[in-house]
Image (cartoon, rainbow, N blue to C red; front, side, top):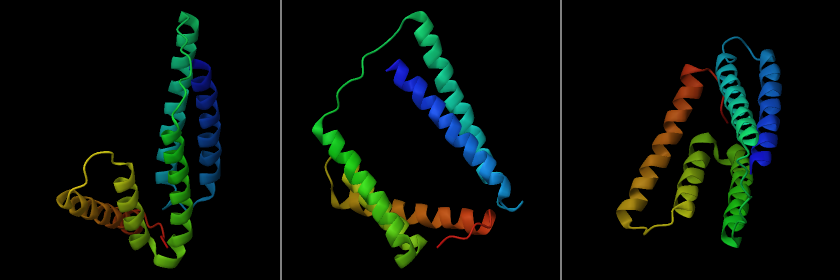
Amino acid sequence: MVRFDLISGAVLFLVFGGAFILARGFSPVAAPYPYIINILGMFLSALMVLTSLVKMLKGKTEEIKKYSKQAWVRVGVTITAVILYSVLLRVLGYILSTSLFGFGMILYLYLGKRTKNYIIFVLIISVSLALLLYFVFRRLLFVWLP
């Protein structure tokens, strides 16, 4: 597991570093948010590399656990939902498609009992979050959303 963390952290650092370089082409109004996210991602991935190096030096290695078939199905459904979300984003618009995506993913990934009150709560949360994100990106950061 330690080697996996080391390699993953290094790859993530390169990805965030590349995205940071690409963000230099953004307009001055839209650039601060990607800078902040990429710097944070580079910091956390460097921290991941350092902690895995410390674990390797101390000799604390763990074996990678095998995941169940249900876990892989959840990963596949999530990837499919993200692809479907990106396709529907242009058709339905940001607020509606984000609300549907959030609602569906929360209901799918929740393992407990689904009551009527819980479903209403999830609907309110997903719509509220979509509206909040739209307001933050469109009104505060001046980033156009579909």
